[in-house]
Length: 576
Image (cartoon, rainbow, N blue to C red):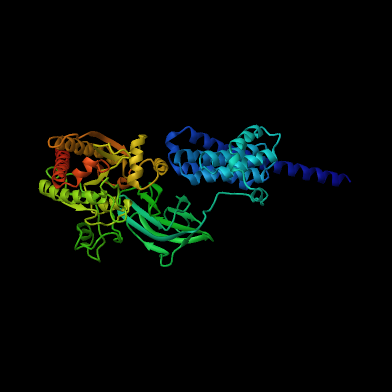
């Protein structure tokens, strides 16, 4: 009997030590996640990057998954929801708000007796009501609080919400329908990966994943080399997505930075795109719409000489009709195309300029009161500016399009990078809901809180105003920072020249100044780049001027003079 009592005591002691160690692990991991969360809240700079929010969220989810029966499991799920909601406040992407609401509701479903359950339901309902505008879902969540937690501290607030949303009460049939737990949504219909494109540039490579509809994605970076000695790997998991027939499983790049791009299926409804890298300093991932695609920019941690296979730019015309296509096709088939950014040389500051006529093809841009399309007038301006710059500066000038062709925004700066341009100038015609608005303004890439700049960027980007906010998550494109000051100086020279030159011949030339804006068309440029809003096509007077050849001639003369002034400044700097 003594032996069995002793054995029982030993078992109890061992179990006690084991449980104490287990509890210590939970406390440690949960505390670490909370510390990372607090550091994120204390750093406005870190908050601008999506991956920082996702990493903290995943830390909380890992605690919940590893210790599902521990009290901190509910706490961790609550904090994962709170972190995802914080991400939405920065990104303004609806899917982030939907995920936050789903995590809150999952807490209430999986831990109904927890004191946080009614709080989580209320927060989920608030997201549905205030952010997503899903009033019926919000009503249902508030009703659950009243039904499940009549003595809870959220019941009074929930009853007030039910009165406010009474008109959205569900029918009797809906009210008694069986309810199942909700986790972050996978999307209503499967998206399809239709192709992968890439552009190799000195020091960085741009990859574009083409989709037939928007897809939720998760990215992850494996920095350390594996047993096989492979370099870092960056992969993107596309949720609820399938691969279209004909998409290659592996694309060889071998540009000194990116070895290859692979596709696979780690799960039934997930497509994984893997980038096998030789080195990596930084990367950015952001989605674009119309058409749907995901852009990945990867930057090398050392200088690289690009010797990539020449990618196919499907929107380019044939070499016989287009200068850029001709340059890209000059490289012999047995010698990979080498690209290097031209260095500023005294007496020859500018060697090649790329002029981008905004919009084109299926994208008409803004439409004037008389039915004039922005895409048409800026194409005429681009052609005239090409001729003028070649005459005035004696440099090589190329157009991203010389006919009514649609070119995706991310492809335009990729073209300029590929041909080693020294300057990139995108021409546009402004528009405003008020037909009275008029004037000239010139933009360079930056992230401004100015509402007018954001609204203009939304129109030029072909996105909503909310989606423009998501650009702040990536802060600046990899190649933008080094060229911000030069771009602002180029913008100032062009703006001043336009206002001064046109004021000599026309009345009511309004100087709207040089501004900053989050324009997709300027992302990724490795050279000074600007976007020029030459006039308001929505204004009858300025629409008429844009269709007048004399006005266009004076406009391109002024822009050419601004570029020449900028070039002169470059020569003076280079000679010192």
